[in-house]
Length: 590
Image (cartoon, rainbow, N blue to C red; front, side, top):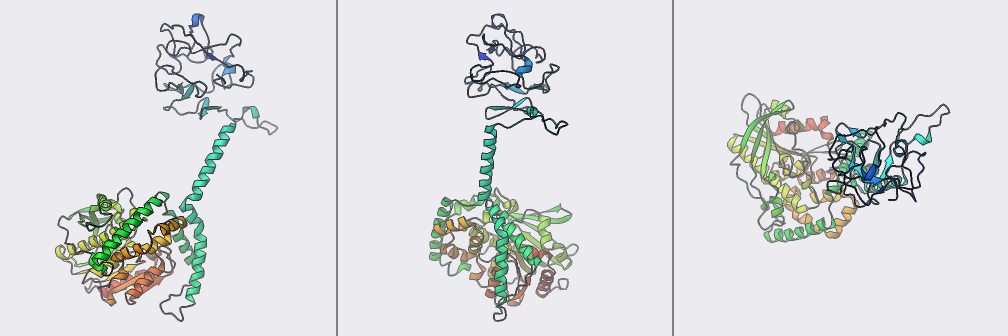
């Protein structure tokens, strides 16, 4: 054995190179069942405190009547004949002034240390050179006389205060071994390396330069407003820059490392896109994307019940979605494996008192759908109720109670563009089924649709598939998912996606079936409405502008803020109120 079990005070003179403090007996005498256990083992007899005798002592014929010498009926250690055993004060790492240890070996009835048995009862220590004799008891907090770090025992000694001269007693202060310092340095390096590769951190660091570039481009474009009436001038202010910065930080936080694709993910996703594009081209859906969508029936198994949350009462509706990809589409099995997603949910807020026949279907944004009260407040359900308009908020696929594993809809915004296309197509299907339910079972006479962000995309698609809608309001809309994913991908992922082709032309062709820019809007021009934030860094103002041009320049409102700034914008509130007043003919809504 190369080292002593415990390295005691400096007054204990031991030669750790030539002499061990204790050595293993080669022949064990029969203990005869008289051994005593103080270390919490299963040996017979009562526990004897350490203050009665020295830690190890020998007896005649190898029998020991001291505390803790017997392990399984035989002494494990005996003194070397050419070396005198140290006293308790020299062998233990505490001050022996009253022969009472400052740190007890027992906490209640549980020992602080127990023998390393390699999984077998008794002693069973087979390699005393490579493993410590004692290891911490996992049931007891390790704050006792020593702590093992990878086999190195570091005694904990309370640091003394400086004396009158202002110098602390160096002999009384604990220190870290070289091995501990090395491990700390390695952990620090690995942590810094992980942080440097974390897309959230790099995104936050890039936020300020990105905002500066955005402001510079905005000023350049604003100068063109005099000669191009499709350009909205931007007046850059500190508030505008702050909201743009907050958007960039939020985008960075959403880039969770676990969601970043690997090379194999991009390769398989690109292969699925190519097969899907070939199928869509053969069926003619790339040229006629509206034909990809089937007309849904009203829900046949819908159930509703009353709920109350956060001071708001509402109805909860649930029904079988009934949507699935076409049988030959790649990704059919993967999408249908989301079992929770096959049940659609919706929050319903009715006008209290008398029956009203005006409804507004509200498609929420990415990450919503978890809190019904919050979702209903985001669409100002109470204010709309005072205007005589009932509100229903469908939960989009893979959100809220429809999520599988995650709850914020991240599975809908991955590098797998087949899944994102399927999610948006199912969202449009579910909204249209709810419209059927409102018209055929709830007696709705007027039904309009509104959507925010991702919901703006869904509302715009529904407006291209449904007739007789009272209005369509697209707020801060996304209209091109492949472009959005390209924009928000970290640089290394963008390069990987470019190499694999997963964000190439195939993605654009496949997503034509869920792009409002590839379909004609069926809602009359005077009942189309769009609003967007000039500093929106998530869906960006450019998406809203493209939809505005495709919809033949309907009513449009811009506000000087970021992606979620519309919620506090008085201009947006007035714009939506005016849109509803112009769209709904009943007196209460007007």
